[in-house]
Length: 372
Image (tube, rainbow, N blue to C red):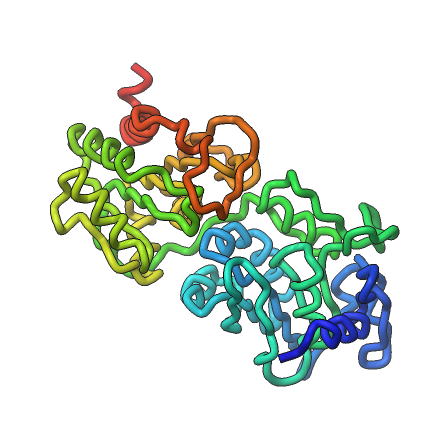
């Protein structure tokens, strides 16, 4: 393991100053690696003309899917090169399903921390891209590998940061996640479209084709709407003649079973244990509708063009919501931002009523009925 001082020393060697985070051109294969913020084409080429590109985004499924437009931009910028994405091992199948990367590097840290990348093998990456965050930890983790070119947000307080050629991009806290990373890449000459969110159709069969999928779980309690309210929505949808199935993550069986018992669902419509990604992807892709909080299946619905109703609380949909589309409804009560990783349901989330959710769901399931 490389300790922080050693990481910072290597960060300086990779082109970023340990203090200011400034890009310093360095010699690569006999020429400078390019000015800070300049086009990525200035990076050196690896053996046989194929560069090794390492991208760090070691977060959750929703983060991975929100990063697809950026990953697709990187894929187009390096069409013949080998792109590796560092992310949790459990998301390897999902990462490969995006058709944007050639391999994965298992990497994970507690919470949403920055993992070490010491297990990267072979020569240093030709290009390293920090899609993980804006702090020095993720930048330093990549810099410790001594990449020939490192793409990252500017360090706080860097006097040379800002818009314009030759300047590293500045982090904006009020920017939508998809737009943020596309703008970031644009500063380095890589074009990316924040609306380029669609995934290839899954090849696995759906365990419940045509059903309404209700997914009550989320990584943190602050984004979990109460099970009793979800059960109320499920009962209303079933009374209207719709099949409803409920699903959850690997550690959410108790939540799923509680909701199912409250709603009176048959065993065949209760999907416990956390579905493998190919089954979850197929379930979402072939669902009539997805109802959930701000979590992975909501982003998967967007990726497959499946209608969705998503409940937001601590974080505004302006920052993490679906693209503007009549197929997607984002429910949110304006108010002060909360902690997306808090250990209790967010007060703004609790202001959303069951009848609002059921009404939005019925409106998507029966659009003609709601307009007459």
